[in-house]
Image (cartoon, rainbow, N blue to C red; front, top):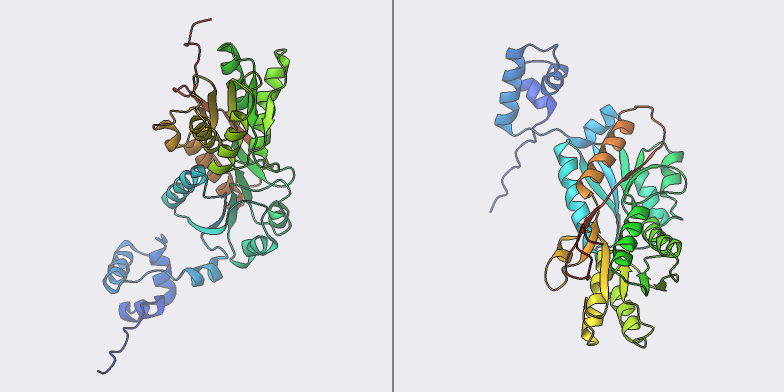
Length: 343
């Protein structure tokens, strides 16, 4: 069977030939340039729709110097928070006419190859939602004038950031548990190099010690359900008189893992141990968890982060900044608490 010839791909040049105008006229008409009359512009747009013309992104990059791409560095996908964050970023970026290039997803510092990809793919800017404090990405972007904004992370050096107020989140949960009468407190920590977990634990511990109580027991955690489960097993193995009566996971997924381990060991949540977390992921609100948590203002964080990034891509000269947004306390059944308004 004879192969059929492939139809010619529609280009600005072929549109110009069919319309009987210069290629510059077609380009201007497709950009809604006011120098082109409404009648000519309408005729060219109709012709482009008829032949299925779509702009060549590579050619547009070469002409304009912009790719229309935002590089995205994402956290470990075994934490559902990052899947929810990616959905928000994709939706909000698309609504503004931008597309994302996923450069990295997973735990640990960004490798040199990933940092180089920020430049090789000519991204116009970069959003980093998970990066260890030792990451080189911010320095690479600064050295090569690629605008960078961190969301859900705060860098020690270069780059702007928007984040939940993680210190305040830890403080809020410590106050909540102490007001309910808990005295043997614990924290399941996150990865040692991440600002979110460090700040949440710091806020919690600082508030407890300031109230004159013993410093909370620190249980090694990480960023996964399995890490929380291991911490829950460690708590369950302690003698009853030493076991914490309430624990904060620095993320919801850690708290959920701990709840599963405690219940499997025959302990009641919240009867024997109350459990709270931070993030506000959807799964934490469903049975069997019903987790008390401080929910991050995710939609607002992404919107503010994109505002900051696109302003810098557009050439606006603004200083680097760190924006903190307050989370929202959600009371659920995973902790026995004092009802609001009661002493």
